[in-house]
Amino acid sequence: MRCVTNGANGGERTDAGDLTPAQRDRVAAALADVEPGKGNLLPALHRVQHELGWVPRAAMTLVARRLGISEAQVYGPATFYSEFRLTPPPASLLTWCSGPTCRVLGGERIKLILEETLDCRLGENGPNDDYGLWLGQCNGTCEQAPQVWLNGRVVGKLGLADAARLARRLRDGETADAIAPPPADAVEIQPALVRRGETP
Ligand code: FES
Image (cartoon, rainbow, N blue to C red):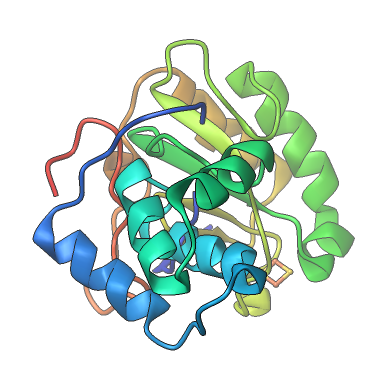
């Protein structure tokens, strides 16, 4: 098992989610080259989610302004499509890579072990909302396949026993940082996500 930093995106609905000035800047930068018009709504929402890990209500307002459409026109699709998350990620977020290389190298069996050990299905949080097991896409670090991300840090070359051990530690209350501390020389590819209970 090896850890490097990377981004994670990251359940349930819904939270007003005021944005800090820093978050507003991040969202504004993410939307800067999105052209106005309703046709760009879904890409704009994806950008917000990619940036923050979820889509706060206040960010929907920024999307509406950027696209020149009403907030209702943003709110409807944002709450309709289950791929958009309207609450912050849990304190410890495990993201399972669904990319082809990870699948070929045993990702499906890893997913089953994680679901069984964590007592939640992919896309859900655990019984106490302390952790979640969410879906991720290939992030370009396939040399570390099969992999999961723990709070945005890649835990790669994962064997079945590694996956079971990691899930047990999460289930038993260990923090993400304790399980997969960031290496000193790691480069953060994306800004850290804002998680439930954190003050950004
Ligand atoms: S397929 Fe999993 S990191 Fe590329």
